[in-house]
View 1 (tube, rainbow, N blue to C red):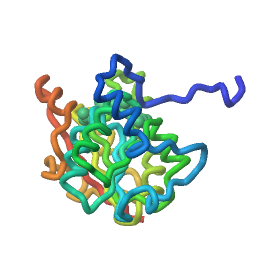
View 2: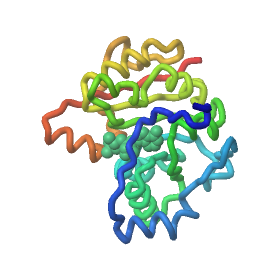
View 3: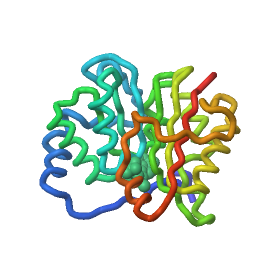
View 4: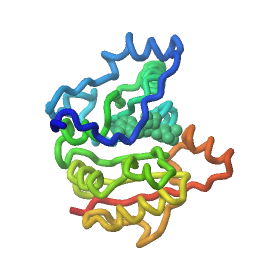
Length: 229
Ligand SMILES: C[S@@+](CC[C@H](N)C(=O)[O-])C[C@H]1O[C@@H](n2cnc3c(N)ncnc32)[C@H](O)[C@@H]1O
């Protein structure tokens, strides 16, 4: 099989379904205001992308976008870049951002791993957020988890020195994997000390998947690290 035909392992399954009118409006009519379509290996220039040049926080897999929306409202001193492949969530977030007249939020609707590799400049991010990433419960599927040593190298390269990584999950086995992967990396330092999970910081709103986990009786593990190159 030629290299071009090898299917990459992806950390997501595309969910489809009917879109509401609001989601369609967000995806189509408002895309030019909030959406970004990076092409090939074009490096994004954050200063020209956002209304104000200020520190950028990246969130991967924002789902329906409600918690990212709340953060962008609460923290106008940051620019937020959200990457998600779930169309309904992208449409919903754009529609809501428009209602709140937000100018510090941009959205990319592509595989975040590819975007990070190809379109984000080194040392350009102030923070990285990953909340309730797909846990891929079965051992044979663990290779599909987005948190892997290689992914953390990529993250460290794109984060500025002193930038933060904030992850949260409701799956204990994935929390342990995240902790081990981050602590094994030379650049990431646990803000609370070795092997310690954080309580949910006030700045992180409760997400949709978190609420679902709570209903099922799941615990929640937050991990907050800094990137010390
Ligand atoms: C379990 S959901 C959590 C959503 C949200 N953070 C929450 O807590 O409600 C994980 C999301 O990550 C997205 N995702 C997973 N891998 C991704 C990737 N490589 N690029 C973009 N989105 C991804 C999925 O589409 C899905 O919506």
